[in-house]
Structure formats: C-alpha cells, structure tokens
Image (cartoon, rainbow, N blue to C red; front, side, top):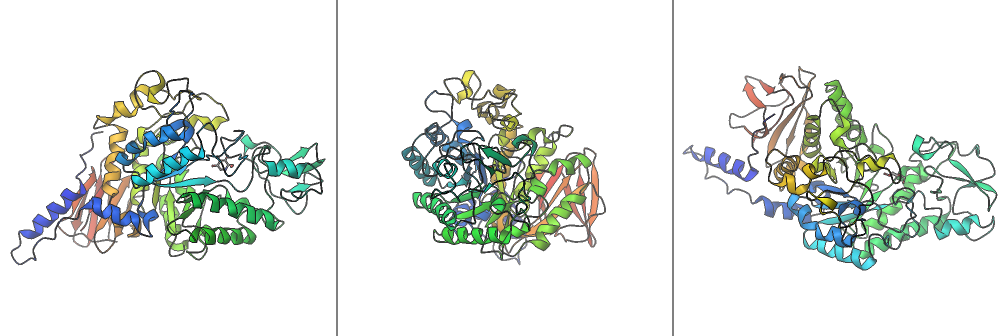
Length: 545
Ligand code: NOJ
C-alpha cells in the first residue's frame, strides 16, 4: 500500500506560518521552531524520559567486536551512531552482569561486574561515555527478585540452616507452605515453584527457573544489599533501571503481587534514585490489565511502567478489527493513573514473539501499532530489530523466547556485519533482505518508516507531555484520539481493518488550516462535527494547529 511521504514537521511549521502571513491583519509569522534544538532542550530537562524514544538493546545480539560470535560492549559502542541517526534517545540494556545464562542473564551471579562475554567494566564505562557524548541515556535491567543459584549469597545460604545468609532466600520444609500460596508458574519455568536442595535438605522458592532462587525481602540485610547494588550502578553513571518483576519481591497469605511491603521497598529504591537527579525507574508490570498501582502517589514509586494491556495484546485489537479494548485500556490510563505517571509503550520485547508476526493475518498492523506507540501519551520503547521488522528465528539456546533474540543483521553476507565468526544464535530468516544496509536506501522499508516516525516525534513536547483525549466515534473499526498542548494540537486516527472506514466525532473541532503530517487518511470539518476518512489499513496524523 503506497503511503504518502512524511512532511517534515519543520516544513509544516513553515507552511502554517506562510498561510497566516497571507492575511494582512495577522501578526508577522512566528519563526519556525528549530526542532533539533527543541529536542535537546526537552531531553536535558527533568521530564527527559517523557520525551525520549527508548530502545531495548540485547548486547549479546547487537554487535560482536572480537569474532567470538557474541555481541559485546565494544561492538555496541561502534553502533551508537546508528542508534543516534535512528532518533533513539535512551537505551534499556537487558542484563549485563555475570551469569550462568540459564535465563539469558536474568540469573545473576555477580551484581557488580560485567558479563565477561560482553567485556569489562572499563568497556562498559567507555560505552556509557560514548553514549552520553551522543546524548543517549542508558538504563540497565535490575533483577532483584531472584539471583542465580550460582551467586555466592545462595551458595552460602544453602550451605546450612544457621549460616549468616541462611535467611537470605525463601526456605521451607514443605513444598506447599500455608503462608506462601504463591507460585503460579508459566509453563516454561516448570511445574512447581519449590525446588528441593539436597545440601540444606529444604525446599527453596523460585518464581522462575529452579536456577533462580527468590531472595527473602523480609530480611533487612537483603533490602540493604540490593539497594546498595542500585547505588553501585548509579555511581557509575547509569540513568536508571528497568526493574524486573519487581511486584514479586514479597509473598504472603494476603497475596502474591505488589503487596504493601513490596511497595515500601519500591519507595526506598525511589529514594535512592532520587539522590541521583535525572535518573529514572521503569517497572516491568505483572498486571496486564492496569499498571496504575506502580506509580504510588505519582512521585514516590515508578517514573514509568510498561502498559502490557496494550503492548503485548495489541494484536488482538487488530485481529478483532474493533477499537473497544483500545478505548478501554487507554481510558483506564486516563482515569486510573495518578498525575505525574508516564505510560511506557511497547509493541514487542525479548519475552514475546516478534511484533512483525504477532498478527499473522494482518502484517500491516505492526505499523499501525507502532504509530499508536509513538503518538499516544507515553514513552515508546522500541525492541531492537523491530525497526527492521525482523522475523522470528528458529534455533533455541536458552528457551523458546530465543526466537525474538536473534543477532542484528547489519548487512548482507556471512556474519551479516554482526560477527566475523559464528553467531551464538543463528540469524532469523531473510537476514540479507532485512539488514540495515539493505533497508537504508529503500523508501518503502520498515527502517525508513521508523526513521520517519521518530523524526515526526522529535522535538515536539506534545507527544511526551501533551494532554490525551480519546475521541468517541460512530464507527468501531477506527481508534482516534487528540493530543494538545499550548503549542500544538493533533488528531490521530488508525483503521483497524483492511477496508476503507469513515467516522464522525463531535468531541473535537477543526480549523480550516489543518494539515496531514503523516499517513494517508483525511480529516474534515463538518459544521459541528469532524469526519475522518481512512483507506483500508490506513491511518492519519492530522495537525489541527
Ligand atoms: C522478566 C524478564 O523479562 C524475563 O525475560 C525473565 O525470564 C523473568 N523476568 C525472570 O527474570
């Protein structure tokens, strides 16, 4: 489907300025805003994370620098210019610490070092320095619910029932203690959350793989030790943390998810982070319906939380072709989230199938989903390779989720510019065609689509912080909303079907000077109503003022 070229926003500003200049009585046109300077301003203020485009990066699969087939920090450093040119402002690095790799690094054996496969602390410091030089912030994964069973803490804890760390993990004489009914397991992590340890002759609790024993947060020493890990990385200069399954720290008879004592811990972590101005916390929510509880009073818990109700389930909305759930999900954001909170929006991650195949019947819908991700009120997190439309790989090293963790193809040919050796995990299908180099110069490629999207968002405060209003429509196949701040206003509409659709709303008004800045639909004022026309599979971003 041909899509109209994107009108760079600076051009839009010029067009609008010149229109108003035709009226002799109007004031002289305002000078066009330098969007790059505006981006710098927005991204250096306290609200930087609301304006930033984040990119989830798997160091292991991004760029190998030494030919061992495993991505590393030197490699990632050499690709920072690519990320900069894409329009990425911040990175979330999946776990980077030493690990036996039973859960791709989510099983940490040493919290104060770098996985030797990825390099050294010095390589990491160099990466941080180079990222910051380019204005790119770096947030790292903080996995505090559990450690690896190889971590010295666990090794000591299991050694006896009375050692100094005996109480650092959750031990029990039975595999079903009444004070801990928690343990709903995902199939890949096994059938019981209790594993028997033959050294200590007791069961230990693990929400994930048996090699990932849960820490005991009822022990104040564990609380202090883990807060200290956060300080260690903040002192090194990271810009914050993506907090892995943070809701699961405590379990009790009362419940298993985000208990009051877990919220207390999160508040303590927030206090630590607040001691390092400009650093942020983003929660991996385990509530797929409503992440509002992660924000506390709006300034004492998380800065951001992933909205999985949209992120992992958007495929269903497009599959059904109906907008009801989208209205419901973002309606909840508007009514339930406390002031100050910020949605974190994904369309894929290392845990789920690649977004390019999430909706097999409707491949076009990934682009529509990405538009919602960029223009709804929230901070977009792009999963590496999403900008290329990578397809799922077929090989497995750790578990089935490896399908979405294949190495980045940079160019056609053996090694795909990722490695000179054998990649640790085979590339996904069509790696030549999907490589960065192949897509670079193609105006219809996914990469070009993403570059345009990010350029449209860049330097416009409205997308990060402008108000959001969901527009009621008389057609359930279209999802539409408006965004507004003092400077600008937009109407965004997405067709959830492959048939042309039209809708009317009276919930917003339009001046005659509106202009399309993205997509292929159109919007018109009709007395007191606004009519939206979208081709099948289409969308529109309409600048109202
Ligand atoms: C959530 C992470 O995203 C997932 O990859 C991991 O397996 C679990 N937490 C356990 O750490």
